[in-house]
Amino acid sequence: MKKYVAKKIQGKLYLCTRDLKISKAFRKVGEISKEALWVKSGDEFSEKEVRKYADVDGEIIPWIEGAEQGGYKMIVFLKGPCGHFH
Image 1 (cartoon, rainbow, N blue to C red):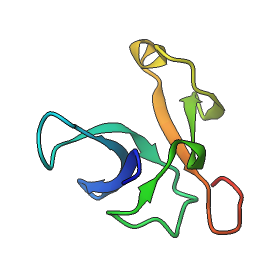
Image 2: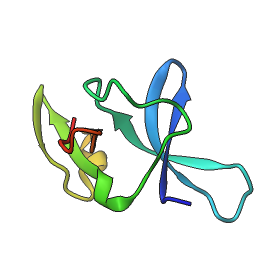
Image 3: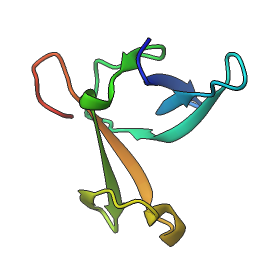
């Protein structure tokens, strides 16, 4: 079982972690990039297949822990079958 799972929530795909305390519960990490067209709800990902970025006024920059407190949205890029992150 991998650390992350894609979940469709209100029409958008989010990367989530499993809540080990509550069976079948998940915690949203961030929205999956719209460029990751191959990803379906239920797909699983390891830490090595995930890169986190912040959307700062339309500019994508590497995620810094605590950025959510500044109101920034996390965008998650995933390693695709081609080996690149989208």
